[in-house]
Length: 361
Picture 1 (tube, helix red, strand yellow):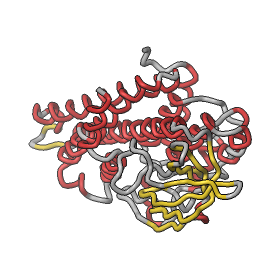
Picture 2 (cartoon, helix red, strand yellow):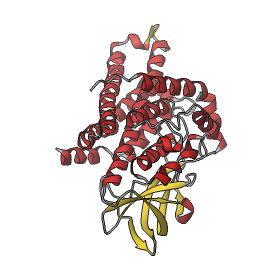
Picture 3 (cartoon, rainbow, N blue to C red):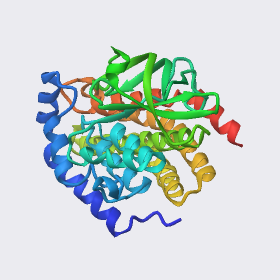
């Protein structure tokens, strides 16, 4: 594959980087955290006006119809600025609906392009790997479907208009759109400060998305993995940029930290971890766009393992190179570390990722 972005993808990256670089300042992040708001609504509107929320929406919803590579482009910039908006959750869910939903369901995504809609997916369940068949069940009830079970760590569940819920049926695993008000939503805050919840479904009505043959579930899971690793790639890139600037300007014994060999070796390890993750992220996203599901599965598994091990170690290194200030919540590095830990947790940790790779090979 060609790892260079094409003109459309490069323009999308530049637009996202310029907008986020202008709006996601340290002061803005501090003000948002102090406000207690679930996400930065002003930034969310700015992303909508710039067309970034509509880039991956289908044409029926007024979007540009772009795919997984463009999704990764946008999400990497979100991660690089640790931007407190539900872009990852909304775009991954929307892209799954665009691929597997009905025409009416695709058209219903239109408000997302205007910033008037938030979506999320509920993939995680207590004690179960992302790839396992859901313990949540769905059964027919008259002319509709009702769902029973629990989902954990669902980001922006209370803010979402609809939650995309995988559930096991007599036919196989399917996806269902469920309104938050039809479930019991119990807040379960995560390390990033973003709102998350545990969902209890007790006869909650659901609207099926696609067939119940497991294909839509597998597609959502791959898109979610691509989203998580793309954000993580941006998180490490942001932490690396911050650390590089710090060791370039911080002086000890009348020398910049960057002049010490021990420091240069450690920052090189951070760079290598980032490059290794990027290769797997872009390869996985490209294979998803090309429809090569099995090959994408392998690439995304490698990317996920990298997030849970080398990337976390690299973030520890960034903190170490900063000394005590790296742990200070008035300094921005702590946000990158929190985001890195959270996304590694979403992936189940290094042992779960090694088990996944073992099963694939």
